[in-house]
Length: 196
Image (cartoon, rainbow, N blue to C red; front, top):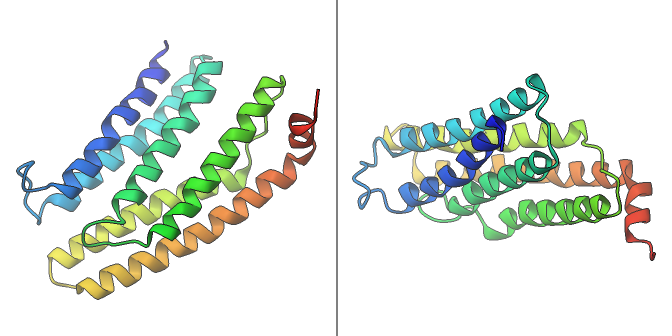
């Protein structure tokens, strides 16, 4: 276990509190006014630790097979948890929209695992990194909308409509990033799916 691994584990352990605080703020003693700020802090720690664990692993030459598996897993858990949480409460994202992210992560991670079992790694794509940035940006955008809603700057319809548009755009790019990933790694994927 390296320092980078501990930051990855921190993300996995911390992100459930995002859902708990969002869904049960009164039980947790958080006012509606401060809820978006608390959620921003949790999400900010998760996103910062994602950047930091990768930086530490490369800086200290601690890139490991465990880290290569845990880091994308922690990313998937974090983002899917947040988007799923936003299907509830005042945001009310459509569940079908969130399923786009789940299917993409499941399919890509399954193929990545199959290739690893065959002894070769699928190359990461820039489109995947852009996808991650856009997903994080959309989550912070929704939390900002919640702040504006609590301040009576926008109404509930505006909050839900703008949230839907933001996530729909990101979902569209997520699909494109998956297509790019499959196409770029098509030869490796064919080998992984071929019979021994």
